[in-house]
Length: 391
Image (cartoon, rainbow, N blue to C red; front, top):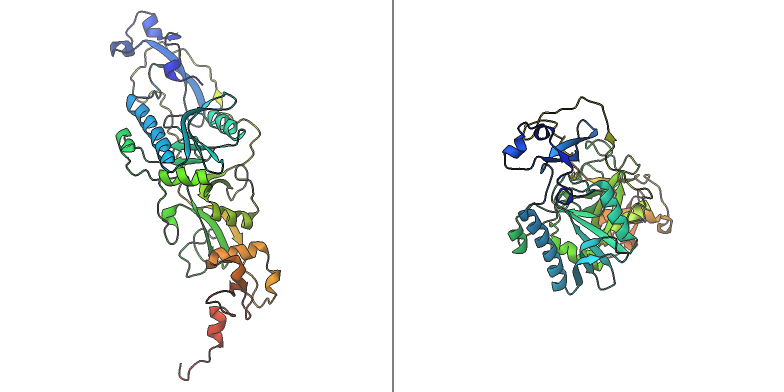
């Protein structure tokens, strides 16, 4: 899709101007020439003629914002001792990435800064082109309605003035980076049960991905400098987490490598990114025959205004893995514990998997080995203590 600034400005002419009648756009000091743009109305995508300029066109401030972000990424990477280059061409000469950061082990991160609108097909094409050359794309957006969200590994930052970016003001990742939370669903749990609509407690072990501020306890915010370093060193990795409903829907996110390993052990999802074979289509274009409108509509408020884009960067937990509670009074040797059960229990208890074992009383997994470990869980130990007289 050609940008507005690169299109022939004399392809279409306002019919009012052509017939010698007043053109509101020309009267306002602008051009009477028009172009075809895609609208979004009621779930449809009709085409309509519009005066120039009417859709997004990069302003000097936005161009400086893009440039400042790119320079900050390169300078930060070089400050960490990483190899970084701006405007790096792809090996097949099919595109240029805004900033290429290479880690000490050869991991290549292609930073794509996109503060202006982009079609889904463009996101798909450029992401696939990068991955075919062992480059992990990392898209940067500032709008929670951007179409690139959850179509590729990405990070969303605040809409900042370019001078703030250049001066080193804090750039927090607001969306696109998450932490894994694994917890036993009990009445004492601070996290809600995802299987019961947020109410009640089922006793199972759940695993979900949370934004840092929504974790228990809350995690510190992730800054863009953190992601520049950890993505290149492999300490943060991209992962695609399918939605609970299944299908192709899901979340693209960056996560700590250790937590990603736990997630993969629990779910057996080993592919960091989905393998999409087909080109993702843009919104379907529809046509309905109407009488030609020969009047000039430039500047009219509300005329054929496009629907607002839906918010895509939602903050709800995602993931949806549940491990059923182990049956009570099920005594078995520790070597019979499955890998998934051991990994889930270790994440819940906050101990190494090697220290997990069954309670000698009820068989529930607990911290059985290592420092400060016990042979029985708290409940079994409490029930074994004789009640005092009069209690």
